[in-house]
Image (cartoon, rainbow, N blue to C red; front, side, top):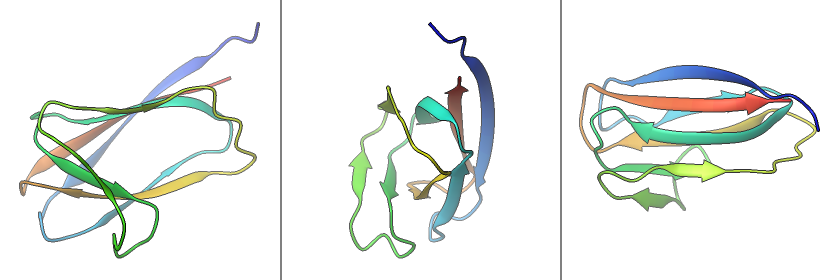
Length: 92
């Protein structure tokens, strides 16, 4: 069993009209994403969020058992200006 190392990254969602890129480094095995104020947020894998998933207030996004050979990039938009996206991820 490999040992995992945890990291935390905060992304300031300054303006609710903006779409913010988030990149997780190579070697990430799992992650959890939520907003600090438990507000709604959208996640997509294209910069314009033409297709996205909306996470209602109080919900988080989590993925486990990731075996990506490169960085993981996604895009986020918050429901409220001034929100903070909290990203907790593990490498191992």
